[in-house]
Amino acid sequence: MTSAAPKPFQDQVDDDNAVFENKTYDVRGWCDVLCCAEKVLTLTNDSVEYHSNCVFGCHDDRSYPYGELSGVGTAKACGCCPGIKPGFPVPGPDGIVVGCCGDLDLTNEIVGELQKRSRQRGDIGQMKRTEEMQEDMKLLLTKVSRMESNLALVMKALKVAPAQEVKMT
Image (cartoon, rainbow, N blue to C red):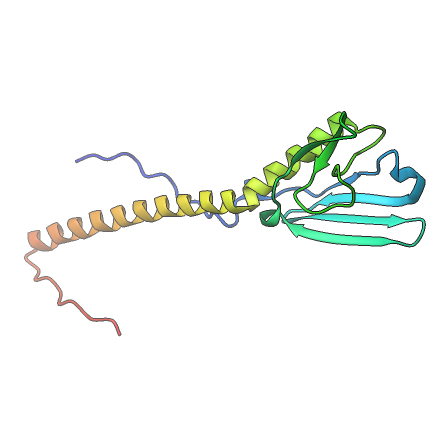
């Protein structure tokens, strides 16, 4: 009886592909230049951080794990300018508008990064890793079962009596 070669077991927790590089974006819009000294979105390995300071002394620091983001996408500011819906509450009705009337390329880059990271770190990523672990467990159980069968055949060939089952307490 021949079977396909088993796939190698991979440690899903320390998978190098699941590590994201930190990225920092200046997300000041045209209107923000007048009052915001700083408005930064930092994408870390596990969370997105929003930081803003205005010339009037207001300060806003927030951090959200990617698994908590909801509804990441693009928005239309003023009906035509591209904006970022980052998946967490931000000031203003149109999300984050970068540059003068929204820098479309930068907006798409940030939205793409947020979506990729929230898929990997969020509920979908968790479900995928759980499914991969279930497949690994099925493979492991198949291997153990095959080993038990082979051991029984070896013991029979050597005329060794099966061991008594031991109860674990």
